Image (tube, rainbow over all chains, first blue to last red):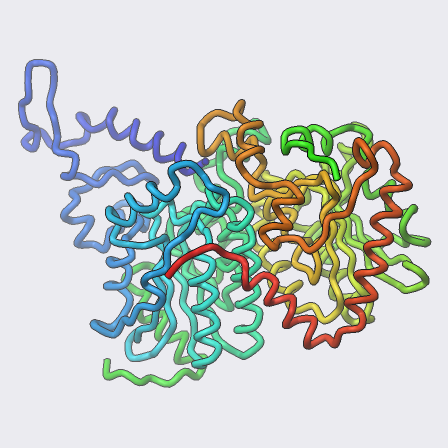
Length: 300
Length: 267
């Protein structure tokens, strides 16, 4: 996939440039052949390729200080930045995928990731308040199989919309995905129709659906629930698209410009309502809920 | 029913002489009148749409067009639609809804086109919009996969009340080649992927993804396109009779449930 390519490329460059960009006094002499820098000391931005201290980067909500690329977050980090403290109640926490096409080692792979990521699959759904406004929320986590959509992602998202329809709550989805979960074959493709169907009903009931596209939102998720928000927000500099970069390059035999499939590219082409910085996201979401006549129930 | 392997079917549906919508439409429908354009950007030849009669009932036909030779394929982009193709499909579906005509989608695509312009014009949004709008379209929708059912590009015309699949047709989340390329970094393992992916008509029926398999003439549709068209016609007659008897409310409820139940998980 294009994404994997990008990561490889960036990683490669990082290794090349590490010695040049790192301040001298941070370098530890290792042996006569060269120097070793601790891997976790710097964040190397995959967009502008500038390195910054990881400590500063993390303090700044994982936003690149130079180009404002909004880097990927774990679902816990996202929740902490978004929801009012201690208001989140998770739904369907125990749901796990089966292996519909009997893909070799799929169950083992899922189990390994479940232990690594403290997640059962690539999305966490539930309800919370944001500055006092109650909402259904979904957060996709790209650490879990690049947040690809299989049975669990499809079912949880569908249930989130069905629940919100019944409870007359808005829905906010933080999307991130490499696309459909190929290991689940045709079943994963059907999740695109299933989630879109649930949104159709939710929308007919008058509910507000806000999509927040985060890095990376691609493939079958872009071609289903991510693109169906009443309001579509993107974080700065994130990757958004349908087809992978490499697939397009192979089709057209041309190199693609850097800004292709960026949030800014989508804004320019009319597929995103606005680009909002992470630090302003909570107030933006709260204001949108207020503008759509949802009642503030919490104190903050 | 033949028991060809998925790989054998993959070769069969790519045969140059496998019938396309341009062969089937005159054999199944009367006096097809083509309607062009999405009213926003242009007219995509990869998706053909229009009105015809079927046993004297007006129906809207939306079809992905594979060419029968290189020239035709250049014109129809090998049946790989751009966003304006999907938007034309939606426009015609909404028109059908207004005039209470059933919609018949004939699916045959390697996938939605992957290119710069397709991205600029919102391929993802166009497909997503169709999935959502077709789910609540208040007239019967029948989709038939004729050959290749490639991923989201096929699904955008396959949110329907009933999905029928030609015996040797395939429907998959990604092409077997793409599957092998992404998961195993080795596109040459295409055949192995085809067998593993469970993409044959029998697999699809087993998963509840399709409702009906339409038999092909011995050796494949290319051996007798008239007989193939007759089999499709017989199915369509039966399906439309069944679906037109149902109220729109029940139709939509059943359509929602058809997709709602697909997923394999524990909790």
